[in-house]
Image (cartoon, rainbow, N blue to C red):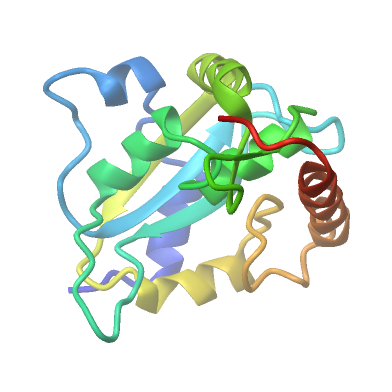
Length: 187
């Protein structure tokens, strides 16, 4: 059963527990292989105009799929955010751009990441400053829009034009992508 949005919002804003990268990436991991909603807090924000120690981003797993079933779970999404790359994680791309890492085209030139060194820097920064919480929910897509509308989530871009930080974040991300298109493709 899907919890009421107000209850879920409270659990994300003031969770019983925040988990570090080391805890999430440990084996066995505490992150359930189940659908749900996750929230990211940062002890040091990725931009000076953002508050520390507050919920700044919400995501869901899986994304609602109409033609096929997604295999994404809280476990796969949260772990991917901590150790993946900017191409597979909007959160990582947003954080890297805010932290001033150089976005680059890689491989065939259609994918963008921060390159090997930049992704390593971002992974290290997240390991030190990013904390995550989650709540299982069988249909998290039913909550996502309401949470984004109800909460102040400056790092969420999708459905979040009403947020005071949206225009600035959009400009920072757009500038990084435009610059990446002018640079040589990394192998």
